Image (tube, rainbow, N blue to C red; front, side, top):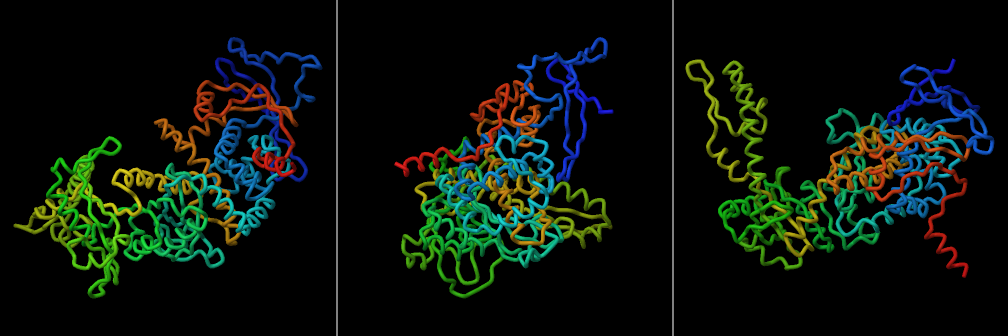
Length: 572
């Protein structure tokens, strides 16, 4: 006997029966729901549904299916709003809709790529997009393999997304773990997630809102620094040579900086505190951080800012440098008090801004003291001599703040005054390098987007199951990443709007809430069930219309309006 279940809408509970039906050629059963009526809370009985006249009956059969409508409706309309559906059509033709449908299902499911088929069967994305074919596992494998080999089509998509990205781009690199070698691309390297697995590296370019515009794949052993030249050259080839590249400090080697300056790239990135000229600038700033002439404000925070010019020159004697330095074995960064500075043409120099944030300084000091107090408590619980011998292992980078000794069999802990004073003076300080930007304000406005590319990577790995790959074929891996890339565009667009409106809800919560909007029907005719005020508000805040009482499904292939106009213009 079919199971009866209830759906609460407002103050009423509606009764349905649910039956699983297998269809020929389908891997998974199809759920068919039949509406019974409204539950009478007083008697516990079901008030049967009203009989409709034949002309008023929406459906030809009493057997109907129910599907999730809201999430698919929202993301599809969002894709059209931001030009993503048009870009996919122009890049991949009619198959662009199949890519978008998979991406929407991936965003809604949040699970492994294998869940896309089940999600597709449970939501209305295919019906809304007029896609009749099913997305079975064999077809998905074939589609991703073909998609991964469609290099020129993918490049066309990147070029179109970059054209919409504005004049500030952020670049970063992350690793994704894999159980296989993926045709030689999966290699051993520095795994940022701390997993003992081979990896591939993914480079991501986002706009100033954190919405992805393109990606690059690199073998797992390739270092962050070595990827930069190829990426910025590709961005320039795609018509974005006048943009500002915003990057993490890891990309700021002397060689990379000189390359970007020589090729006319605008950029902004933080300097590494182990660099000699950075240390010198911070020392000068510390002495003048209370100088009111150097105070500036950005985004509600007051900074003390010391401006300087920096040149990149050959070292007098080659020497190795640590990871916390922008200097390399052959080249170093110098200020205008170095005699070699004058030998460097003005157009080959870059700006440096030493900044002090008093609010961040207080946060840094609180963090330091909390860490030192925690380490001290651990040390006092240990055997005195074991504590002395194990200081570096227990304290790590904080060991430099401690002097340990044993007096009368007891552990004596003292904090080094010089190290504490140094940390206090350097707290809240940082140095930014920039080129091609007119002022500190312009540089800070550009660098604000740096955080968003990190959030995009976090969403890719944790919300779209992009942190670990489960395929061995490189073309299939790339095809899957293209679909996740499209899903990530939608995800980050939602995130950017929530951030702009200062709404605390996570993207996943918003999509889950919208996906509670259901539709029941069969064939091309579907009735939309109740839409809550919260979901109406969510859609309208994004400029997306709320579904009407009925949804009529069209079987026509999607063609962007701009393409139609172009075709009509050419025919004239």
